[in-house]
Length: 188
Image (spheres, rainbow, N blue to C red):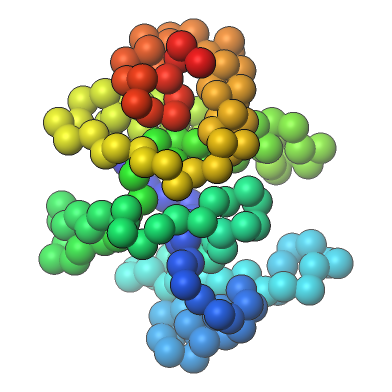
């Protein structure tokens, strides 16, 4: 992605800890992480942050678990590892189609929320979805989807794709380039 992220979403696989326990363990293991109380006064959870280099720079870190927010279970064998272009690190990534499905879900959830601060996230979602589509259609090695994603998640993704195209018709040409073997095929 070309923009600097406001937060990092990390999909946690094969973990027996709760989200809160994992957050506490991450903080205990690395001093660059810290916890703060949620802005929601009724929330019982803490928010995980990571200190970035530079004065007063931090990034929120969301630990996402399969089964929460309709996130499907991801088989570890479909995770690919890509070298970061400017760091000497290899990052684990899920295939781009499931990522698009999750980003479409966030876009729709943010738009349907009654909270203004959630609605305000939609323009960023649109930019991210558009950029992911650009990456998808220009990539030389498109990852196969496989059969691990639940049909209900795929069906919801196709509905969200149609709604997205209604509002952003200039993206239709990219959606139409998604091959029939992929979940978001426009012919469905």
